[in-house]
Length: 57
Image (cartoon, rainbow, N blue to C red):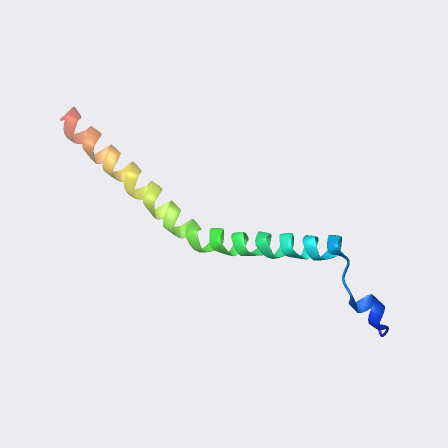
């Protein structure tokens, strides 16, 4: 690790590092969006159920 040659990353290693960064980025985005998506699904189901009840009665 102390030699300067080892510090130079190979193209494949750099590409893998970039893919890992993108994967981490999207994982964070999905974690942020997950509650929002659940809320939208909940609202859609609730509206659909209420409209069905109104039609039924």
